[in-house]
Image 1 (tube, rainbow, N blue to C red):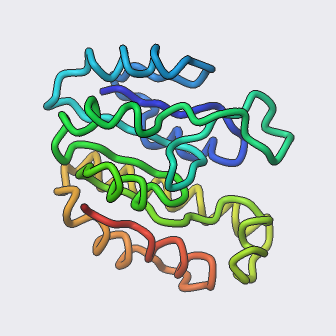
Image 2 (image 1 turned 90 degrees about the vertical axis):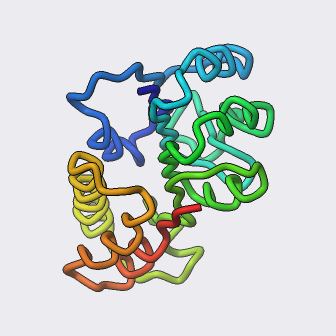
Image 3 (image 1 turned 135 degrees about the vertical axis):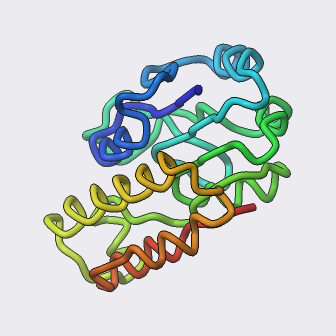
Length: 182
């Protein structure tokens, strides 16, 4: 399995999705060409995980996670061909990954907007605290990992995630409703 998860303190909880698994994990800065090379050499039947911050344009990278801005897109349209080869065996957790997948014709498990920072909660008018964000997003990541470990079909995960929300706060309701199988 190839995991691309640019290092960032606000998405560090997503490491629960691959900790302890046999995986090639990319957390550092790589050129788009180097990412393309990695994706090219991952067998099509092997899972690819793309985790972190992003938009409908792709997965972001930032050198300094104490700043709000991102330095570049590390996975984007240029990687479409390599990602399409995985035919439904992609797990992408970043804001608006579903829009990226639709635009690029990708299949797998993708998230819409996932609130991982207070600034995002404010932007979407979701009442929460830093403590709730930290606690509930760790739980969300561990729950997703448990479903992946159980080999639950990716197509069933959005419904299963909804059923796992035991808090039903504005934050958890928002985040748990933003898993899509495409």
